[in-house]
Image 1 (tube, one colour):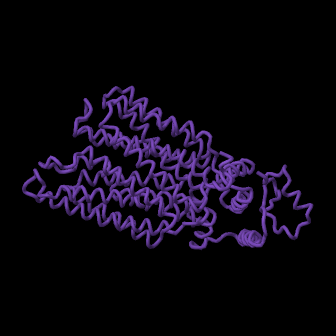
Image 2 (image 1 turned 90 degrees about the vertical axis):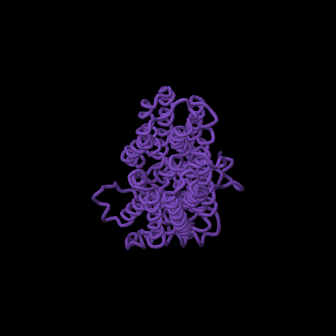
Image 3 (image 1 turned 45 degrees about the horizontal axis):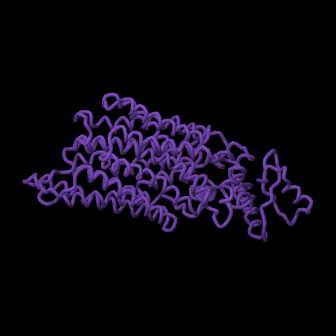
Length: 520
């Protein structure tokens, strides 16, 4: 991998390490797809067993319960013990969940424990993977790689719906274990996040991590110098201090709002319940529940891939706003079609509205993948300071789970499906309002630059001495003709020097001596 870190392949290491981490999201999609496929098989009787109608809500509910339980300990562990080791633990949870499914031997009443374990792994994945990918990526590709993590989840969902009707129960479980094994074998070689190592002031390890991720010693020293300037992010986090830290507080509130509203826009309900809510049709060519579930997953994956291709070109705000407005219109149209189906006198052919319903839901799944599926979590981790990034991500995931539960309750409790669709459309419209008013643009900015941007925006600028030092170092970088950013040691850690020209050659040589922590 080290040889690929050199030009003309400077981005290959961070791309590979991000894709290794995204295998965890692929397993997350498989777990979600397995639960959804169980509901499809309840309708189609593809397997030799099914679930009773009263058991249907418990299948996704156990996943949500496990994911919600995971939010508190994982949010703490990610910031304390590291992104890498928490993510590796998640891989073992996926393995354990599939082994329990295999041992359950097709007895639905024994599968609830497996679903809780899978929910723990899914909740942890939604927290730790975006944090890790954001911190190992350069600004120019961070949006693409964050969107690809969600695309890998959609690919897992698509794979499960493609394989579910074609293979048997045990074969499907065996195939589902393989991505978790591949994840453990590949991600174990990945470096720890340099941002977390800098927060813990483990400068040698942070330098080693950056060396394995960046293309040159100059790039390593530039980024290391930026990490050293963020002294306020090395303070211990105390809950009661958050109101006095505007950047962390506003990142927390925005993650909460985006997580809740994006989940309330209906993705969970569409994935798990669309096959059960499709109207029947006497037309033999009408799409069946298994094909429809596969089509929804494919549309969602297509939207995520388009998002990955455009998010670093058009920006986060524009992509989120475009996704929100298109989801609002398409879901409102689906609600109108459901209203027409409910008023139809001939329930057999749904008055010709069945295909409009399918087209509307597939359009909504694509539009949701354009931004609402991936960008709320990406914005949460980009906005949060390093020492509270796991906490902010866990709060966003927790409220996303709450929003998923509320979306499901709306579908189950409201008297008609069109009323739930209008709730989903209203939630998407609220996301549009947030995107146009309070969501910051983070495209093309490093995580340190995002923090400085938010500090100025919320009136919490850096201390004068820190800001002066940052400006001085930046001016020095602009006037330095070539080579590297020299570093010296101060109080046991490397710091950027005021000026190369003002130092004698002997001092400059000593600063770059092989024994220094700053030298990779």
